[in-house]
Length: 263
Image 1 (cartoon, rainbow, N blue to C red):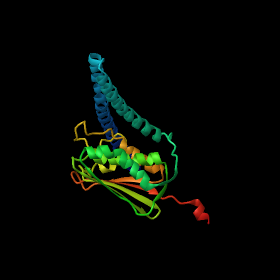
Image 2 (image 1 turned 60 degrees about the vertical axis):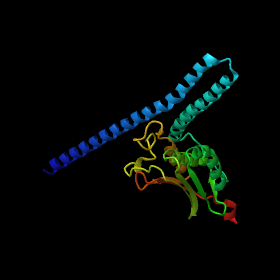
Image 3 (image 1 turned 30 degrees about the vertical axis):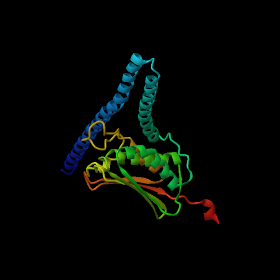
Image 4 (image 1 turned 90 degrees about the horizontal axis):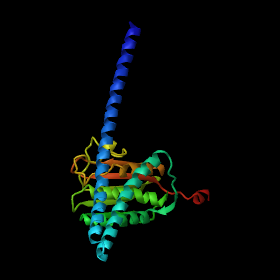
């Protein structure tokens, strides 16, 4: 009897594992279809704009102002497509360990200032208010300046995007022990508690109820966490629920001067 009972338990355990694997496979397939759906829309818009510009050029190509408008518009749209492709390639490169950080001692305030300047047009264009609060004393990090700026830019762009016009964004930083804790908080749409454990998963759409014009590819936050972890830090997300804003927290090690330690 004991051996039979054990065999029955093993069979039940295997059946449970198979069912869980099937659910995980279905969930992965659903995320893939959602990602492809959003990607198709993200690519269709700039491609349609380029196609329309070419038609205008064909009809009114002798006009210098028209040619300049077409050139400028096509440049913007091709840059948009290029950014999409670069983001997808970066996720893959990080997953396979193909990206190397170029760390150097840097001042946090300068990196935050560059990130804010990068997103300023997007933030102000939506009528948002952005408030930055940093420690009065310099905060030094051993980090890749371009990658750290990318982390902050992605978080700020997300905050600006998932918020009704006239919202507020707060950026704060403070030293805690041997780390600096960066917080990007917003008064936006918030995050469903059920989604919080998955918010940094690659290709996970932050909010499926939004229309295509607002939904992203689910790449930006995945890059945030992976880049934070490559720096020896972490990234986490918090929200009190839908309609109650969200907060993203990035912890990074402070820079320690080896020369100062040895003296």
